[in-house]
Image 1 (cartoon, helix red, strand yellow):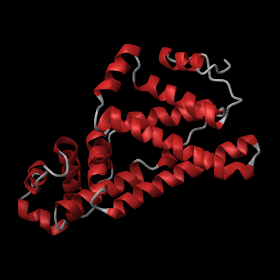
Image 2 (cartoon, helix red, strand yellow):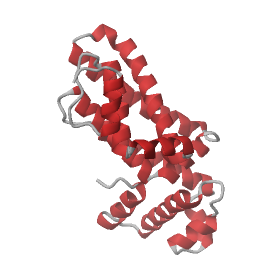
Image 3 (cartoon, one colour):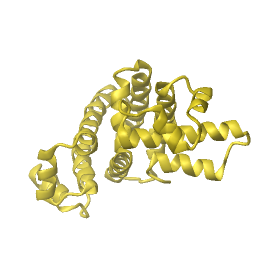
Image 4 (spheres, one colour):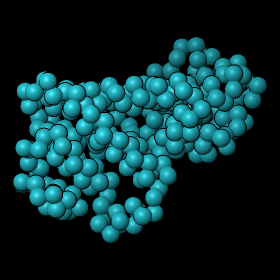
Length: 240
C-alpha cells in the first residue's frame, strides 16, 4: 500500500474509475485539491489552482463543491477515515515491542509522505470543529485497541482505564514528534537527529522503547535496535 494519500487517490481513479463522467471529474478535482493542499497549504490555495491542475474550467468546480473549504473537507475527511484509519496499522506481530514498533514506524512514514496534508489538517481543524471531532474519534479508536491488546496480554482487564490513560499520554508524544519532525520542523530536533545519526525508523524505535517501558515493563527490547534506540535502552537500564 502506498504511503502517499495523493498516490492512493490517483491509483484508485486509475484502477477503479467511477462509471459516470461527473463522478470521474469530481474525483479529479479532489486529487487536484489534495495536491494543492500538499504543495501550498489551505490558506494560500485558490480554486484556480485546483481547476488548473485538474484541467477543467474554473466554473465547473462549483458544480461539485460550494467553495475550496468544502473541497478541502472532502479530501481531509476521507484521508482521516479511510487512509489514516488506525485499523490499517494492526499487525500480526506476536510480541509487544514488534507490534508497537510496526505501528510507530508506519505512522512516521505516512506522516512524512503527507507532511503538507497533515499541516493542513491542523490548520483546518482550528476552523472546522467537525474535523477535529473526526480526528479525535480516530485517535480514541486506536488508543482503545492498543489498551485492550495490552491488558489482554497481561491478563489484567481491570487495569484498562490506567492503560488507556497511559496510551493517551504516549500517543500525545507521537503527535508532538510528528509536529516537530514534519509539520513545523524543529531545528533543535533536526540537529540532535543528525548528531545521533537517527533516521525516522530509529526515532520510531526509540519512541517504541518508551512505549514498551510503560505498557509492558517486564518485556525486553530486541537486540536489533538502531544505535540511538539502543543507547536509550541502556540509559533507561532496561533488561536486554
